[in-house]
Amino acid sequence: MPRGFIRKEPLDSRKLRETLEVVYLFTRANWMTFCDRIQGYDDEVTEEFLMSLQPKSKILATINFRGLTLKLTPQLISRVTDLPLGIPWSKEERALGQKAKKEFFLPEEQFSEDKNGVHRASLHPFWSEVSLQIMKYITYEGRFSIVYGYHFRLLTELRHKMDLPTEQKLSIPYFPLQSLMECGTKLKEGTPNQLAHHGLIQLLVEYALHTYTVPLSWEIFRNMSKNDDIRILAEELTSSSSEEKEHIEA
Image (cartoon, rainbow, N blue to C red):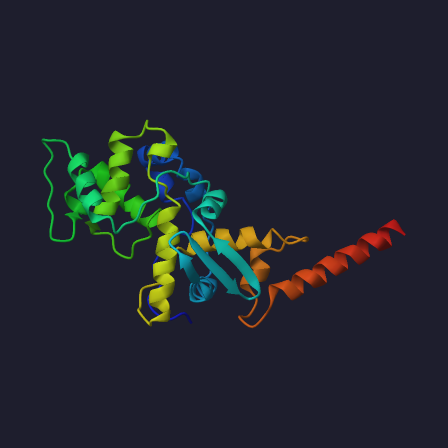
């Protein structure tokens, strides 16, 4: 079994779709397509993916496990998820997070905060639900009680800057790339609670599997052992497919 706590991430978008107003916001922000693409995940694949991840820079990491290789970039994550590219950003930009928090609230709104952020329960019920779904589908939090500065950067865009051009908004793919690097590093150090981004990892693996001459399925890959090599299987299937084609033509 994978080490550490496995975050209870969504298996699909059904719970999200129960709140139409949130779906409307996510659709306008061009996030909903990604949420709808999430269709389950595999814990073992997630752990092996993260353990094999090698950061090369802030915008590049490589993956190599079970013979599958990938170069992770914001551009690839955007292609796989349909999340738009825009302004590069990081959750470590705390001053910008505090600025966004001040911009988010209307003058008459009251809220409760501690040294880490704002208590989600103190937000207006609608924005509390929006922030919860951001945590579940976009930033993949392990806990949902506190809204941090980086959440307010997204919330402020949804509330006050929705009509800005895409290139003037935060680039969502930068966040999961940096988060994957952080999770992989901490997992190798033995830190618990680091298995995250399960649904995104499945989408990335499926993308790589479909680059072979004979596209391979997620089910085939997830049922392999960690010592298997997908390249050998791909070569065997390609050879078999060629022989079958030649037989039919003959």
